[in-house]
Length: 183
Length: 328
Image 1 (cartoon, rainbow over the protein chains, first blue to last red):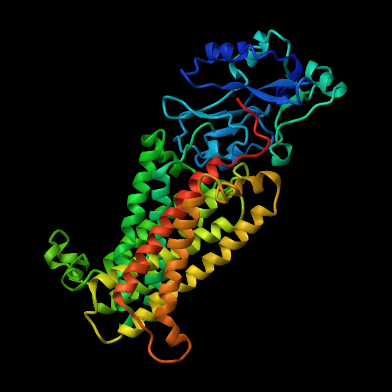
Image 2 (cartoon, rainbow over the protein chains, first blue to last red):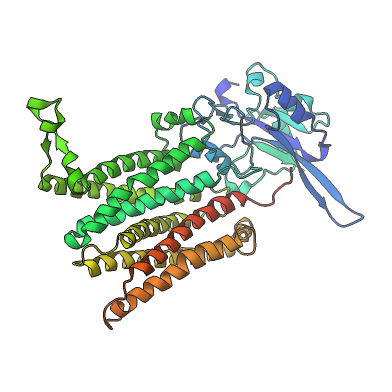
């Protein structure tokens, strides 16, 4: 399939996440993320139910690389942009650190880097371009994180989405997030 | 966001930009009505207008994560970004207000407005001072150019916040109108305050001047009420995220700030004072009860209310979020 027809996305199996935070560590190491800042996270859903039938789930996340990214829309300098394969990136030299994108992102996926610009998950674009999966996916011990081309019907993510019930976070926001969760 | 990203610096900037927009608007309005009665309002508004917004923009640059990269704003126009449009708007507005203020410099200083003389390009003392007619014509031209710009700056500060769907507290069109009316009101109040502090040096036209200022301010305060009521209703009757966000000022963290600072100090008290001053005139039961002391007090209330309004909106907006919120 031609390079520009790719549409990268995540499928995350919520039940398989054990909150070990290996994805967060792998991301930090891979991308040299500053101390106290994170490009990805593990959200906690619950506890739900009433004793003794209690439940708790973990919902890992990172930048959703939305099809309709509000961060890109509000960026006053054009520093935030979308590649043809749908990956949303920040051109750090153009970023002035106004934090408008942080207001606009419903997923709180962005943070102020210690250098003053805004940083976030890149889907490990440097690894993708070298034909490797993102660091968080490669390291995931529970097999919760899956990554692939949503436009390729034979990819792992497409097959999962074709066969399993899934949801996206804040669908009503109209952002078209490209992390799909299987609950 | 885990913390408040836009803090008091942004609150100050939004307030100061609005204040300048209002001061310019009332000045340009007074210029257009014309006549000697309104000259003082036009001059004071014109001389005030450039400074708060310039200070505000300075604060804004200082607040950036990379202040020295700010020029990137002016290498592009991003039509979908309110901040990009606003940056250009503010730049144009500041240039117009500076030129306009220069044209309103009082008597000995207006001698500084000169055009170069072909024979003496390097000798300022030989340049030709502008004639009063030329000054008047250019005041009118800049007032006409600047008036829409001032409305733009006033409404932009609200659109900046209102155009963000992921902060439900902000995401209504009412915020833009509310900030515009509040900007007009605080600009008018500033001129009201300065004229009250200067006193009545010219008895002729005093009634007309007070009527213009007090009634303009009153109109904008009433318009603010017409925005605040639907704002509260819209949120209370809207989606879960939206209805929850309004809790921030209906029992939540910013309740006291909103009801005491914005509603009582910024709306109710100045409304009562200004209505008291104007009522006999409105009801045609005699002369209005203009008082410089009351004007000063109501103007200070309006300014406090305008500032607290920005504070409540900037902070509560950032505390609002789509629901359900997943704990991290």
